[in-house]
Image (cartoon, rainbow, N blue to C red; front, side, top):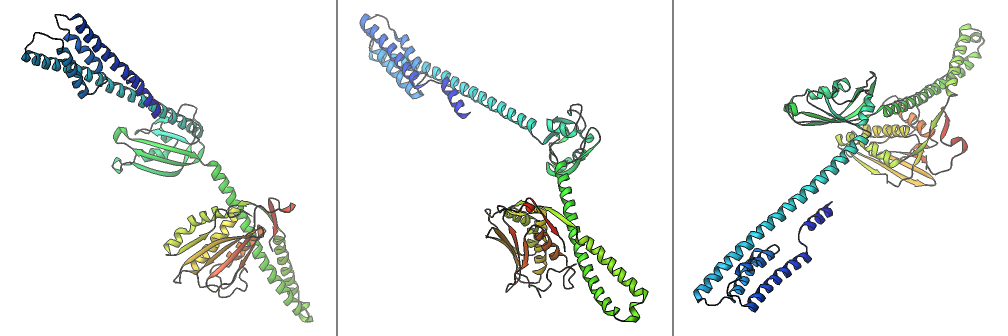
Length: 482
């Protein structure tokens, strides 16, 4: 558009070729006047006609050039005037110079004013064109936007709404002029805020009400501006029904999977206790006095029933959907989640997860939960030490990716039965590491503790996403929790 503006200006201002033609015309007119006075030797002066070459040249000359041209024409005119005293000749020269200069400057001012008017006119046309283009682009952006865009006045009436807003609210009538409280009460409440708060820009998660009365979850970003009756609210809405649905389904499946793992852990321990009870009962059964006791037989039956109940849970199989997971993106998300906790503790986090790290086959939610569990364990472990650091790095070799999570804590007192559930020395229930390892094994990976001279280090080994899978592992894996 800037190039168009420049071309528009040049079309209305004299070009270099036009300037040459104007100068030639003025010079030719001056030559004709000189030739006429020299050839015919008039007994009267043609001085009044010398003003025309100056006026023509003034359309392209500067002020000083016009003065010089006027002096030259006045001098030329004086060459053909006879019977004059020296004083009369000087006076006529001065008067002619003043007249020619005045006319020339008048033409110069008229031409300059014309240039200014044309320039402003061209600029105005240019700005109008740009404004129309911007308005058209904004209109198309608003109409084609998948997000709903609304403008609401101080009385809570909708001033403008795009197609996406009509789709979200499913209104049979145009939204313009309708009260926003009917669809988004949060916007109506925002307009009731005191004007003294000034302009407000914020976001909110709210429920929108459709024409048929159904509620829709939305994410909104809105701004309040203006004062009095000129106060306005501009808002952008996004329907998050699909995101909420997918998130809740994923959370339900994750909770169900972890519940099965926890139930399997409990069943495993119950089975171990039942086995111990049967050993003791067998030893006690060698005594004839006790073996015939009906209470002793009932105790054995109860232990057998409890073992069978635990075995039923152990035989349940779960199917975990696997997909390529970017460890770099997972690490960045983990940084956002736990970074503030380490900052509050005056700790530091080292991330050595390059962007070119191969994707791994895993369940993203399960892997994230495992990383969160390890980072929270590290956070508790470094509370009482001077150097608080968590290091996460990846290594790729032999079609596998190792994810190392190491901290600078006090370390493990013992690594025996580290992944056993319900450990007495555990800070909590003792299920964190057990469940984490079970989740990693459900991906076909491994999780192990690596002894270090200082701190604690866990290594998670996962398959790279580019590896070939067996037919039964294509896209999903089965695991028996034992």
